[in-house]
Each structure stands twice: as C-alpha cells, then as structure tokens.
Amino acid sequence: MSDAEWAVVRDLLPVPGWLAGRGGRPEGYCHRQMIDAVRYLVDNGIKWRAMPSDFPPWPRVYAFFIRWRDTGLIAELHDRLRGSVRRAEGRDPEPSAAVIDSQSVKADATVALTSRGFDAGKKINGRKRHLLTDTLGLLLCVRVTPASTTDRDAARTLLPAATGCFRQLSRVWADGGYTGHLVDWAAAHLGLVLDIVRRSDDVQGFEVLPRRWVVERSFAWFLRSRRLVRDYERRTDTSEAVILWSMTTLMSRRLAARQQSPAPLRAA
Image (cartoon, rainbow, N blue to C red; front, side, top):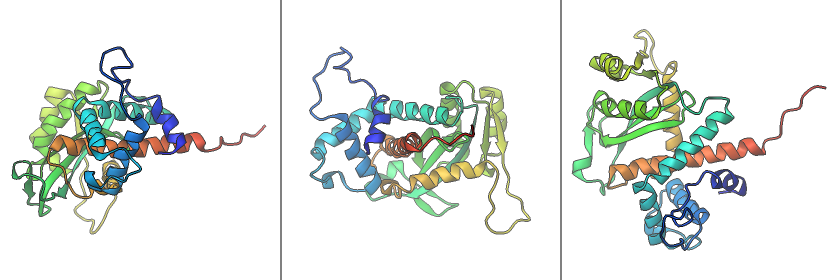
C-alpha cells in the first residue's frame, strides 16, 4: 500500500477497542503492516504459511484476518471506502438503484461437500457468488453459496439484507435468471422494482446489455485477485471476507489516484 493509499485508509479504519477505552491490550503490529499482509495474500493467491518474512508472522496475520471477519470490521472499512468513492464521483453515499447477478467458480479440494454444489448450466462444481452492486459497480452485498443454489433462491436472502441496509434502494436490474415469482415477491414484500434486462433472441454472439454489464465488470475486477480465481476457503463467510478485501484494495487505489491527479486547468 502506497503512502497515498494509507493516507486515505488511515482515517477510515475502525478504532481498536483499547484506543476507544473498551478494554483489551494494544496490538503488537500496526494496522498498516497487517493490512498490507492480507492484501498481499488476496492479490497473489498464496497460502497463509507462505507469507513472506517482510510481513508479521502468518499466525498473527491470520488471527487479524479472522478477527476482522468475525467482528465485521472489514465490512465496516469497505462500506466507508464505498461511501468515499461515491462522494468523489458526485453521488449520494447511499444508492437508490442496483444491479444483481451471480458468478460460479470452481472450488478447491479444501472446500467441503456441504458447502459446494454443481451448477448444471455452466457445468461447474464449486460455489456461486451472488453480488449486488450499485450503478458504479461498487459492491453493496455479497453472498457465497453452493453452485447448485439458483439465482432466485439466493436473491430472497440477498435483497432483504440490502433493503435493510440501504433505505433508498428502489430499483434493481437483473438478467433472465431472476424472472418469475421473484419479481412480484420483491415488489410486494420489499417495495423493490426488479427490472429484467433481456437479451434479444435475434442477436448472435456477444452483446453488451444495458445495466447488466456493470456487475459483469465487477466480477472481472475480482478475478484480478488471484485468491478469487478459484474458491479456496473452507467457510463461505471467509470467501465473502476475501471479496471485501479485494474491493477495499480497488477502492483505496482509486481514491489515492484521484487525490494525486492534478486539478484541471480553468480558463481565466
């Protein structure tokens, strides 16, 4: 993490309990070292035991990762960064529209049979990532399920969680996998307009569809992190945490690049 990124991230970090007077002992390593180590693991896809000696010992980094996953601190940092990126883009911190889709990925042998499945449509044995993003492609909610879970079933848990966090959310764009009873259910129970963006039957080959391409680009962003090319995690909440870490890296770099870019010249 560059100094410019650290300047962005430092002010958004959750305050440790011992600094806020809630008890506990001071941490042995600074947050920048720990965050750099976790980002290195997510970006390069290494094993925990293969952590380079430049970073703190891997058991300490792993304990830091687990603590931030279980206490929701990584989700808190991610949400703060997302709000900063949206404000920098001239948007309201809370979105009013979103895009939903899923991605099936192969699972490693470390993934138990109870948390994996077979996606018959894409012929993939592994897990499925269900994403809800805003119109900029920034992550709002994520759920990791066995690949056998249908998009409609996953949306029944993903959409209520999103409406509970984002009160202004009123419209969601989706593909043909979300058609059927889900459209009426979302309108009746959540007050959401679920817009189905359909692909024309007359078009052959690849076609960029309105709104749907936004979430597809977000999936492409994930695959820049080698830890996400395949699902290696034993638990689904760990997979979700790795996705959050990947997005925090992308957003912190975007904010740092924006602050370092020169201001545009204005005519006198």
